[in-house]
Image (cartoon, rainbow, N blue to C red):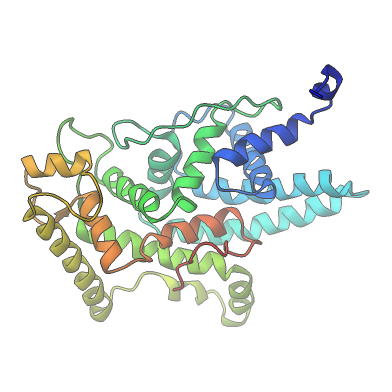
Length: 326
């Protein structure tokens, strides 16, 4: 027998929303619930749609994801005294804010929050060629850009190495220029790409070890965090330069090939780069992908690991993914 009208009316719209979103994005129901609430909190705090990027994006994600845990706990557990949970969340948010601010100010490249949001979440068509899935209607009043937000989280953390590498690449493009000239190949400095991965690896470690580090900080004093600032010693720079050189060699190898052979068809970037050679020390996205597959298969995991511990600090890394261990 078919479903009656009364059966249709009894469908929980929240569960239906989670089911539909779960079919599109690589997250379970608890993760989707958290992300939906994080997005709602983010938009409520800004008071506008997410058509522009913000330098405080990373800090906003970190703090609002904690508050989303508080909201979820109240609904799931029907707590008699939600003020206790709220007070604990506010304390966690203050401590987390300190760590995130240090990461933004001393670890990550300048304005990385802005470039990450623009590359992964705002999806400026001058920077990225990604298409956003059709919007799923939201019966609970969340912003109509929810799909764009979920797609950004997926691309930067859960959809594999190629997707994360593209976000990192686009971020490097943005760090040099906010616009691009049409019909010219996208390229980034090889050293810029390596430097971003290096800094993300440190940031990932700080987020994944946050609770332990707070304890060690109490014992070591105020200078404790300074030990994590990216090193500028000759030996460290030499290691990064070696990686940068190997990335340049991948670009040179591709430039000497008549046709790319590492996957079925060339991207528009590759076709353009054949017509117009890149400047010295510049590399294309295809070269970065080739280099990562051969030389540094976990390079893209620097971003994926960072995003996971930024949004899900109390959850273990997904067993189907390999985190970057610093």
